Image (cartoon, rainbow, N blue to C red; front, side, top):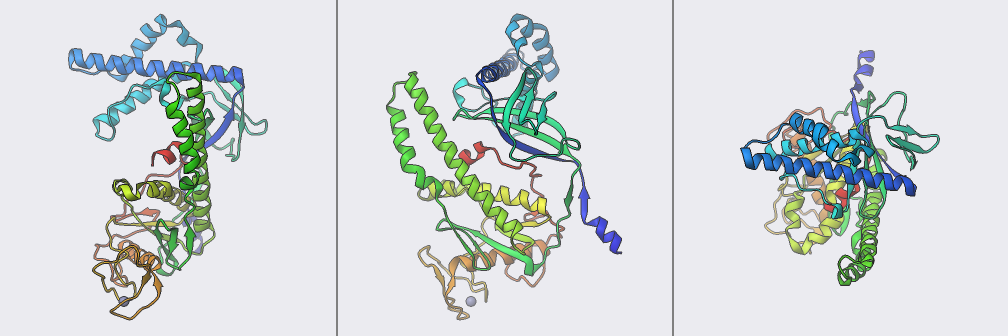
Length: 430
Ligand SMILES: [Zn+2]
């Protein structure tokens, strides 16, 4: 029995993890990278136009195979300069376009856009022949060997298999390499959900996070603090002559400011989720599945909500929980967590935002912080959804049996969060 339990504790499966490193190409390497970005963009746009034209003329698109054939037999012979770059990166661009179309036809994405030089982020992929040397601190790409890199985190080179490497240049002019590796690493099996080891989490604007134990984390309001400096620089940019060299410089400065804000925000969120997952006795975390996009439409609060980046918080919390064998219980979007008394279940008609303390007219509970009360309700609803026990009378939801991971209503397992760090772009977009 004991032995069985022991082996049951770990789940072995091949997992994909992305490691994102900052890289520092020298002038010659940067020129080579620039050439790669340009050629990949050219091939992508060429294939997009070809597909579009074929559709307009014949009413039929071109298959992946047909486009690849035309690329190899026609385009590459006409444009001989394409042979200067890694041909696999060019083929990967065709693969990406194919995926973009598949997503478009499945209704998951918009029609693929033409890639522009001025769009800020530039990227290309290397599907093979990339070598990572942790000891020397360099990464070797096909045709561009020996790029200096800062490896802040290592993976097991013997055991892990490098799948693809994506090279990116940010609008601020920083270079990154995202190394996607497949490992047979064992991840801990999600622990059993227990009511006394579940922490309710309420996300707010005054305090960033309030838990059901009454702990409060202040909101750093990163963007608001840096906002003044940013808007001065943005105004300067708006006044500069289009197409001029100074405008280009100023644009990079604004992009750097944005990147700095995103970094500060990520730093705060990584530390906060680390504290929650690795420094608390709790094994499950109940959170609201926030309808963020809908809330941003409320213009009065939009900037603050964007600044708070609750979506990134949930992403970070989820993948850290999977790594640690803990659970995330997501509760529905419109559960009334702030209007109900956690003690007696009495429901208030109104609960204006300025009322910060919970005084219950029904059971006489007094002086409980409004947000702590809400966090406790979130904990109870999350538990009721996951366990379906009558202990948690406050939820009217049907039950779902759960052995955990990331759980929302109806036991939906969120995407496998493999990435160690979400891309910086998400921070600016959310
Ligand atoms: Zn009450």
